[in-house]
Image (cartoon, rainbow, N blue to C red; front, top):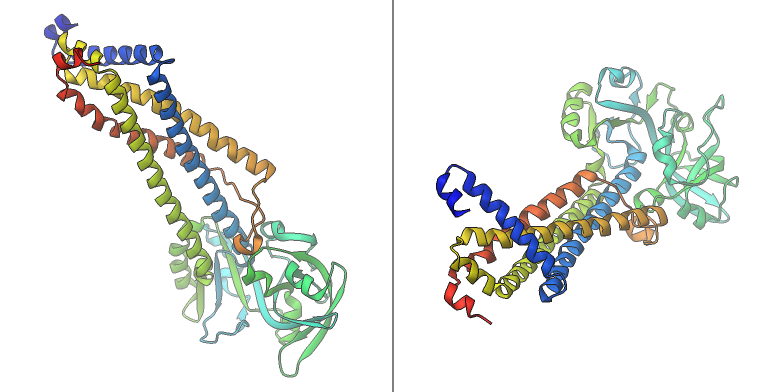
Length: 422
């Protein structure tokens, strides 16, 4: 090798050193399986594996939380809402004409997936000598039922096929518990206005989101009933809910639609309307990123300690190599390759831990939650293979670079002292 090294200085030297370093690294790894260094290897693999597994699990759960909560909120209000601009803080909106070009020709906007009308009306529910205040959200047959069906626990949507307005409503589980109502029961609906008006309604279904903003306030009914009570013609509604093809671009499309609808109408993002919930999700994401940083730091610290132990154990070997003329760079590569082999094995273990947990939790749902605190009954899992690959790459690159730090000590090892080292 030394002869070849002297003959060719244009790249052959590097190739020889790389192959030789890898070969020696592999041999000392295999020979040390049952020795003290073998136990150190297992600790290193376990350290990397557990760290990566926890990171994968954390991101699977985080994405699950974000997606499930966003789906619940969006199923009620879309990505964007268009209402009449007003300074009033009332739950009821000023009417908008359905002749709005955005509503009639929404297919002209390729970023809009779906649009539906709605109207809100303050009401009182009375049943079994109990009265509850609520907001009747009037919806039509255009309401996207597929996005809301995940929230339904009993029954079905109100029947919108009647010639006049439907006398069916859907209420939340918390309202049903307080009023002692079940699907098929009747209740009185008092409309808060002057003079007050009352209608006898039938419970067609019960939903539950676990989110107080919805469960304690909103009941679903026929928009034609609200139009009738407000003395509005069929052409007037309270507003429009817009579902986008890409929620991540909501800021851009919000600004574009503000120019489309004009100054009299107000376009609001759902993330602004329920800012406290989305802020909570953002806080969760920051916490997970901090946790990721700490886990990587611990993994790097462990690998530095483990590599230092391996170098100390192989001090005699290092001295012999130096006495034979091996350069510090070649010896450092031996230990770097050794460390990278451990990292690769740790990544395999970590993926097995993280992915196995994700599969078991998504199938068995053995980790449960309090719906009042977390808005869902079990820990959600959302598969994102891009993040899993990114976590693997990040862990491998960061920890591999850190391996260069402890190998610097090799250049300070004296051949004579190290050969006599015991």
